[in-house]
Amino acid sequence: MFLACAGRSVLRTLRSAAYLRNYATADSPVALGKAPSPPKSNNTRYELDARILNELLRRPSTSRVNLGNLVLEYMERGGNILQTSLPYESRPSSQRKVQLTSAAEDGVAMVAHCVRDGENHKISLSSAFALEGSWKREGESVIVSCAHTMEEIRRSPLLTPDQLKPILDSASNSDCRLSGSFVISGSRETTEFHPVSAVLSALHRSDLVLFRKTGPVLKTLPVSPYPAHPNTAIRAHFVADEEPEEPGWVPWIGGTWSKWVRGTVLGYRDFAGREAKPGTYDALSHLMFQPVPTPGSSGGPIVDEESGAVIGVILGTRQDLGIQGLRGWGVPAEVIFEMFSLPGLSIKQ
Image (tube, rainbow, N blue to C red; front, top):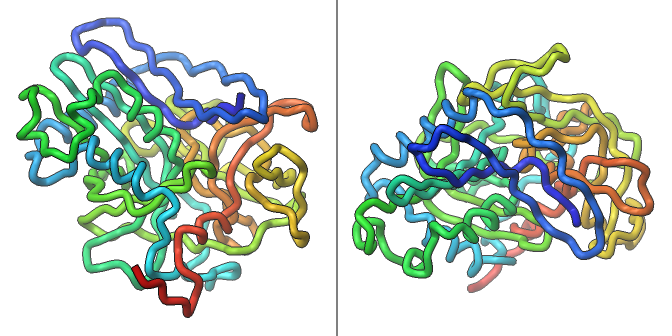
């Protein structure tokens, strides 16, 4: 079993004093892994969950899209190719390259899927980042993230069959049931919540999804269509609930902490788990790297330290027979381009 450590979710009763956050997982028939031990419970989770639920409660249903609708779009738009291209930025300019200073300054965001039914609620969290493109309208951003947190929450008992119909919250059978997804950006002091307005595309097998959000435009990250070779020095965006002992961690959204952690590309695997190499006809389905990402990091970018371009997306961790010990598991950035048209190619619907 391959376990994506970074998606986070919780289902509990609001009146209960006990608190436990379960971590979203993604399964694969060809890889074996062990879930990392969840971090100790602390007030950070209460703070972040409380802010997300407050946003859900205070916003009228007309200003956000029902999570059931988003789930339907996620299922129906699997493999959808957008009628626009994503810029090739393997060597971005000094103004475009990721500066690797802090998440708030570099454009890393968080995606929260949440549903509340009476006293019960469930929240799934992941990291994310915005993409550049000429398709964007004013006040609109396109966000890429991992898909396994969407998979996790769509299986929640709180999302009943009735909710999975394309209806508004106001027409639901339960006046107490609310749901939606938010893109959360900014810093600890200036946190902003933006409702997700649509799912544009998804690659279910690759664990990627594209969201659209309205509101203030987010800073975009340059994405390289070319795979980084093994031993390439990288920086991966990690997230922690509590401040780690290691230096370099900075405050982030909702009491969390973030850091651009130094690492290395270890290699690639195809969907069958076999070793794959850049520069050949091998399918580079997944990327392996070190160190192992922390919970909450999946969906975040992996950046080539030299060029400052995104070369991968964090998914979680994996251990198989060909590797000794647990390793970081992601998807090469070139896979993101599969959801976009080739430059100069017009696709007719």
